[in-house]
Length: 146
Image 1 (cartoon, rainbow, N blue to C red):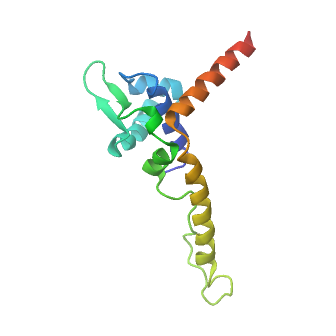
Image 2: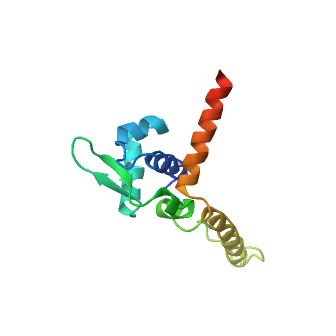
């Protein structure tokens, strides 16, 4: 998966947090400004991981499984991308090289530190907070245009 799925998912979840009934994928795709087929792939992953549920029927669509203030950005990221922001090189280093023999272990320590810092911060930000910030910024932007 690509990291680009994360901001799309956050946008979709923030939008869904504004309605208890939820929205259709077409409506969400229009807000995100992406193709609904692509968006449905992202939403399907969120459904599979228990962050969203689907509504069947004519007014069908998606809605949050629990309140947006209980859903953190860390949880969203992990559900789409896993538990790390950076990965080791797929190339096998030369074990006879003084750097190559230890680079994987050294770099993994750095990756672990970065992941811990980022996830600690993402745990403190809820989808409700993102939605609130987005609405505030949107109002400010509209006010500045007039």
